[in-house]
Image (cartoon, rainbow, N blue to C red):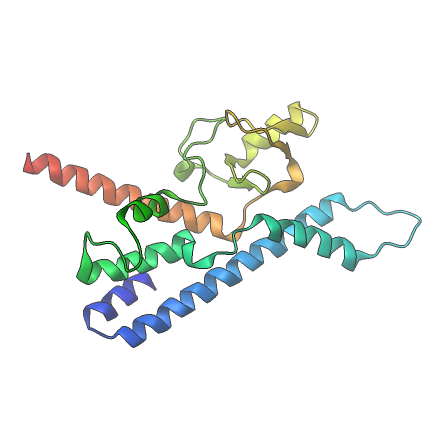
Length: 207
């Protein structure tokens, strides 16, 4: 959608670009909602224990869902994927210039903000772009290789402190999930890394 929007901007079709932008915002919002639902379902399933008393499943699920919603960012326009979409369109005619209403400092801060908080798995040392089965902790948002982090938790009786230095959160297996946006974000990071490598190679050749 980003590539299509860039083409439309090059063709001077701002109304079509705006329609695509609105669609991207809606899709990211729906994806965030699906993350919350899938995470709540997973935690609810792992935590539920049958008992003699009547269980109000609706209330329990709503409580889990509310907990995840409270931890998610509700400011969609600042979401990383939406930000990248807008920047790509803006750069068609305004490369190097700050977008309207933003100072250069704001752009630097926003560009470095990401849902990806760690670029390597703290247990394997591998870049997250090379992980076989990445999972994200819903508490602290750090990312790990699933097999390795599960082995780590098993050695800690299923509860251990996040292995990221300085993170105080206690990990639980039922709160380590591969949410729908994680793979998209990692793929975007791969693309950004490739673009940076190309730019560095070009600069070296020029020198």
